[in-house]
Length: 253
Figure 1: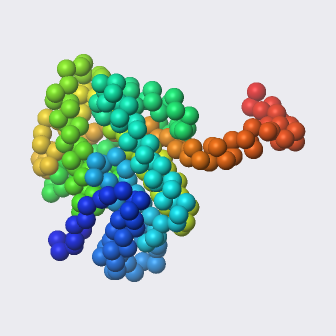
Figure 2: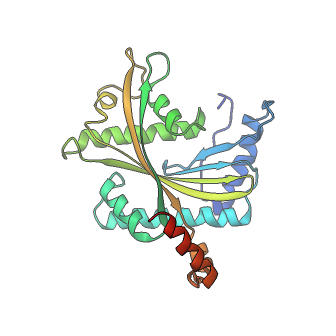
Figure 3: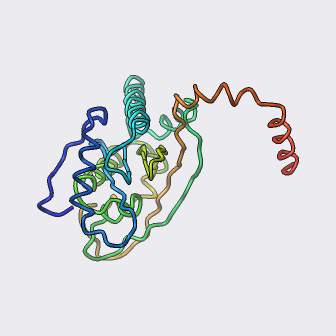
């Protein structure tokens, strides 16, 4: 974001602040877009746990409802962790909760090797730009960097063994061309895998390039309202549909 760009504090989407932000953000950041592609606006909430991407200045009502649902669910999940004496960095707790709610379907588990290059870009900037390509500067970039710093601090304080996983949960809320969707990414790392990152200040560049492992599990979030609406219909399993399933099943046995 340009130095003279206004700074906005994120509040709940129910107050329409997010829509207003996106309207101004689009004017500020995309006025020079001449490539013919539809620009995508990105913003991260204050805690770095909810990431929004939209091609529209104003969100549809169904999108607002879905995103509000995410906000409430995340608040409930963090409260549950606190009441269980767990932290937001507890990988095992997040994984158990996600797999038990019935609202998430795992769609991907990836392990990528990121090359941290020597030069002018700081380590944290390179990591964020690799994991969230839409973020390049501005307040959301700083929030993401703060998350990395918090994770580094947790690695330093942790008394667990070098292979114990520390996690960060991120809801990715998208409305692209009018179609809303939510995925959840559970990033995780260990002291062993992040020795080089934690051994030097993340906010600085490095003199020598090195490789860094990045791991995460991705889940599709299924809206509880959609479950209530379509669950009954899908559970009826019309005879012809059941026959189709059995035929498809025979192909893979």
